[in-house]
Image (cartoon, rainbow, N blue to C red; front, side, top):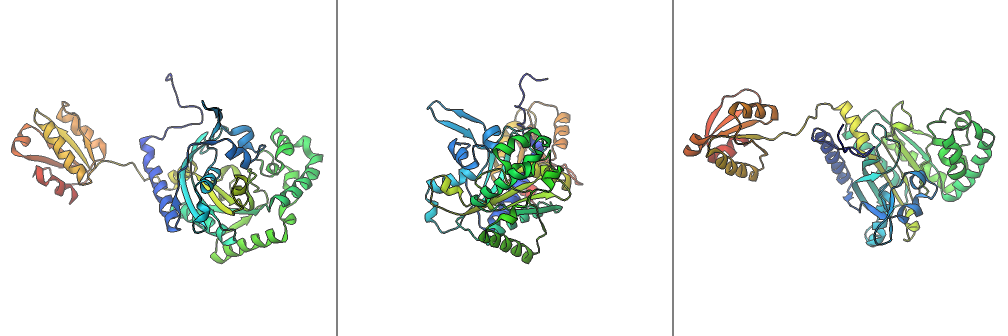
Length: 418
């Protein structure tokens, strides 16, 4: 056991994982740009109020999961637990309200939550997210959902189902909370300890409790859609009509309520078919009050976030042959003059965009050839004293058939590119 290890729930992404992660990042950025979204990066830390004033003091993120600390200047900062609030803070700070609306943004960012680690859910995890700020229409919800659906489709995750709900406005939820308190009060002692806590602090979260999902009181809870205002109901009906128009399969699920105070109206999750909420791959929703909570003018917004580690589990399962990235050329220097000639050749190859794995001078030819074969490179380029004196290299194919041949040093670039 090594003396030092990564903190619990915080994992290293190793070189053998890089191909899957790069595939996910490249696909996500390509899809986001197809929808005309633009990248934004915000600081890893924010003033703690960015999250406490928006997520809610009694939300799980603030009450149990947020990493907060005092810095040397006396400010209380927090490691980013989610991406939306920081993006909205940047929207206000940089005057993005003066730009053509809506402002369409996407990000890749690590997030931190002190939660129980499990497969695909870690205390430090990476998120890809998009935010569409400045459009309150049902069409904006549909655009963001369609972007998320397209991302999963492009990644080969076709066995996911969209579960969607509306939680109305703050006024709707205030009335609904009172109804839930009356409903759950006779059953409180039979609910889990976590649900009993949530009954006092954030009663909507009792509905999506994993421990109590099968409890009769949860199964038979009043449906929030019965308490939506006429405007909220019309908004949700239009979202569903747009989904129907695109032929997107979905399930209306009243248990999807979101745990953050800033959500309003449309909320959704993508889950593997037949799986429970713990298997959620990505989730989103509308947050029309968030900009105002942060001191900006009332501005609608909608977006989603999806965990890269959670997607990677699915991609590993559906596309196991992505492999790892290998260099194009493995150089094998030997003798006294070979290393200098190989260094110059490697510079020319890299300048032409050819990836080079530099072999180690001083090792035996047998050991270097063994390393070259194990590297996955397409070619080995061998230069010793004789080759350096004559201005040539031995070009040895490592993949497929083909004989080793002698090539002038000035022609190696063309030979490996051809």
